[in-house]
Image (cartoon, rainbow, N blue to C red; front, side, top):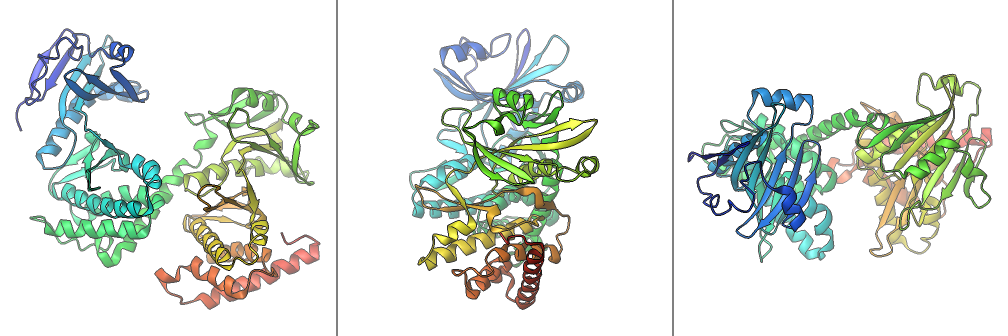
Length: 572
């Protein structure tokens, strides 16, 4: 690797790539100003655009007359960063060197031009990294989430397949080159398409990489799991399998490669990699489940007098202040639209707080037993459970209206009435009402059955259960433009997280849903078998044991019906 060129000013020491011949020509543009790059001047003249901003770093896209580049400004923003700056090189310098090393090992990445280390007044260093702009390239995650769906169906399929192959080949090259990327996700991959839709991928943000000998099968598997965590939630199994096949074929063709014999990388054993990824995701989700009860950049703890609770930081302050002052005020207004009024709860609809926003749903949980406030000392109230699991389902990519706030009236440390504010799913009806519309549309009904079965299967696969999984607690919405049908879980009081979800709980959930359609005229026994076949994933696991499931669900359904008849409660 060629030695870098050092250039010092009064407050910044630059390390410049020797192939970057522009420093002298750019001396008057402000990049190598003695006090650091002239970012504010570039912003005022429109030569710079803020791409990303946070407490630790900011990223700017700068277009100067002779150079188009990205400038990353690392800051020392907390005690940990301050201590690290005392014993380690600046982050920009480390990323500069690691990017050059990755390029030397044959990996496609950005071209690092310079790294600057600035000494601040308190003895700690901020730093700057300059990389050449890669034209017509976008982050892979943004392309897959925002752009791909807007293309024609044929082009979507072609690009998905090609990207999967190219990604697998890039990962094989990376691992065979001895590079372990510990922050491997699609946001750190840039996608570039040529005129014939042939994709190229580039590694970026390579600060968190390690270099060594070619990765062993176990090390390769562990690194692949990090990337698969993202794709498992957003891509089809066939695309992931295509990527893993391309990975193994490319890895076996590379010189000095080991045969990847561990089950997670064997083409026939890809399910092991999927299981390991699911376990990794489950651990990640569990660690974030309580985040909504803390104060951070997404949530905050709120209090006003006897009313306490939690809210998202994006909730409009006027509405939150009104709820904290008196949560019952909105229920007393004559114009309030009531959706439900029962001894246990009252549900109303609120107009959107801002023009063009989403309408809101406010639910009040009543205290129905004298023991309820005392029970709140040892377990979450129904309102708080709905808030926590609403965000928990969102973390797990399960559809549910986003909870915005949860409040309680509190006296002597005991929680009484609870209030839950959520977004509304516009133009949605419950599952029973939607099925009633499908008279004469057998194909549409079968597609809906498959959609519900896949959703419940995913719920259970991600170690959640919903003991009140009745049809009214599933909303169905048809998109007016694409005519696609989507499902939403609501009323999450009965949701529970499991480390190991037992079959008995899965049977109870399925029986509760079956009870809603036990005697429905449009849902036949064949439809119910079709539901069970999709839920059990016969195409993947085979159909062994389905009769046992059928008998257990039928027995649990009959027991539920008998219990509701004794208690004179509707089946729902």
